[in-house]
Image (cartoon, rainbow over all chains, first blue to last red; front, side, top):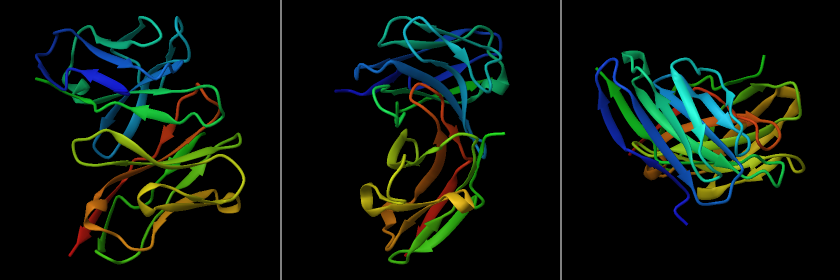
Length: 114
Length: 113
């Protein structure tokens, strides 16, 4: 099992450009999440999807859109990138057949917006 | 409001010394508590978790944590730190499966020789 994979690993954008961050999991998890990590801020939730076909906003959704393409894949789109979106983005997934909500994380995408 | 506080931004411990990282939470429902570790340039790895039962939980890499409901704390401990433990540590709290976790801002651990 590869677990949670993310592409790309690194990306540099100019202000106003768009891009999509891809995330896939092979653990048959129902729930998937997108977080951003900034120095001194910990991880903050952008969007999550509790099941295929549903998405919900998290703490910092402005400037982002998401698509739960199928059970495996959950993409994050920046329509018009801004320097404030320079961050490390992590995708995670969790299994819902128990109470724990243990989340498994991908390796991250390091995004710089100039 | 739901929140997690890690009071120590940065801690330095000598190799072989004991370690305690603090975590306090504020959560309305029964909390599920987690500690994650992040090595430089890497993703997050789960160290241990608490849901119910024994308030002292054991995790990977020799770590343990104790849940104290009266103090709203879930502190992480290790009796003898190794240089490879240098990393950033995150405490998180959540509810039922399918809901998001709330993370603390993290504690960076440095290990001196």
